[in-house]
Image: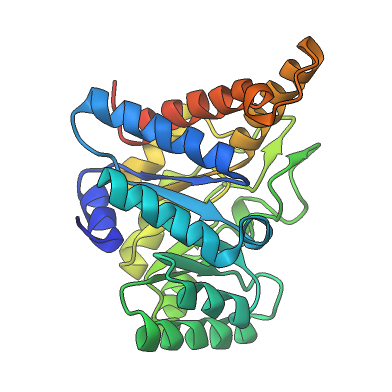
Length: 291
């Protein structure tokens, strides 16, 4: 099986994007994995999938337990299923994920100064080079807001003027030595009730040409399908989806609980899982450009 780095390079070459799905429990994980298997069977080729778990999601699963879970699925089904330690806000917890065997980690320095962000990211890169060189280190550079909830309006400070500057991004990549970059290109975390802003493929292309590292789109939930295709064509290699899955899961759960008095979780969770599976299938097909 190819490494995640090889799958990312292949996706970029073919103008496709690897779907990255955040999951909060085993039901969501299995719904996503089932979706990936079904689409792959239809397509005739196993499509790589990244499972993302943020700090809170890792605390819920267990930092090492979720790695064991992913590895068991990957080995049993010979499937390119990878795990990413999403949005981690300290060097210690990022290195903890490297120790645990994650395929990818994200140090998120948006809560600290630029200089501290650079220094902390360099520490993470140095640690992974020593402990597990195959692990990829990603960093976010630019303001795309925080949280994967449903928001009344666009968070303050997010605009075309605050998108990632390609010159500054290049300097950041060179100084830190990261493997992938998550830029601000019109994307925003969470779903905006009034509608998510348009994505900017021109800025994607500028940042890619300047940095030369794979680019990751965070905050994919709520963006228009045409926007996704345009930024994939411009060079985005991975796209994160979280809020859409959470909304689908909650909706299915609420409907089942309203309809009956079932007390067995695996029964009343069934509709929630099917909602997540359907949304994941839609995104996999779109990002992999399957008609």
